[in-house]
Image: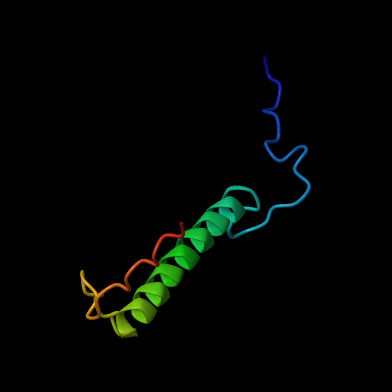
Length: 73
């Protein structure tokens, strides 16, 4: 049993340092979705807060309702 240990780099073509191509890409996409949703909500809230509220309509009109037309015979 004097065989040399197998080289762990056999079959490795390229080693890239930094973020991975799979998990990191999915994480970045999800992060961008949450970021855009948060920004969109903040912008919508700012626009809604800057608008003047619509005045409430009175329950009863100021003028009386017109009389119904007379019935034809």
